[in-house]
Length: 336
Image 1 (cartoon, helix red, strand yellow):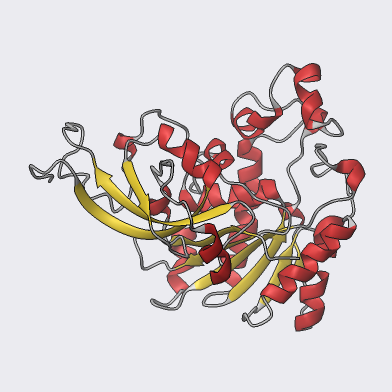
Image 2: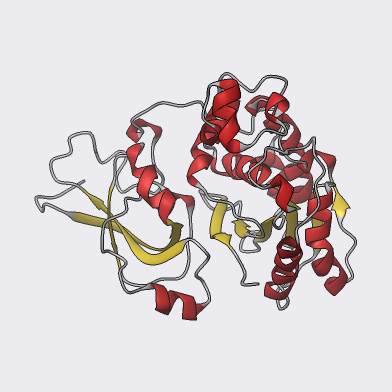
């Protein structure tokens, strides 16, 4: 329960968060956040909720962060302090301190992307021993060939990597050089297989290709440029996640259909590799679906996450914790 002080610090977290996420996500969550100092890591989905970008809070930190090796292409690194604003009658001892953000604190109700009864992940994770985490490295393929830049290719266009995209794959392998990797899983699409090749060769590991990790089927949008979607379909391409979750794209996949195919693939990986480290090479859309499932968030909220070409997102799985899935690193782009 909050005291008489105008501000009550309830939790301090070190965070590494994309500025675009920090700027927008606080619109849907009712938390005030003070940003200061230098840190290196985002731990826990609850830290992600309610982050608000404050001007000048992270000035002068980019150089230090770059030297620390934790600065991605669009990251600023800072310490995140969750605070309770004064005179907020909606907060009670029932929900405070916020070990997790209660749905009652969300301003706009949404349909959550949940695992559902068909995917008993809690039962599967019972075989995982306490204090023996499973680590997933979610890796997006490298940059694609130039003619497909800013084009909806999805699962229907099996494009190759650009020369820079090949370097992205090499950079991923180099960054993971000293990291234990027990298995590699991947989408069967060409751009993904080309990206994982350096790591697979380095480790002498044969990747397991899972068709259900292929990119989203964008239906009638396939082959259209991002800036042409508005002209041809009357909607903004930047709203694609929300559109998939609501009215859908003509002849394309819905959020429900994506969940039905990605969910079993994720369960297969978790069930097969308790206490191990697994690299999962796939696509920006599929990484967002996986994060939505793990965090039990609506798919549209994953628009707040930037997933760059050749980026690495690290998720630690510890079933004994209240939050079984913790984001350790988000959208980190190894230097090429």
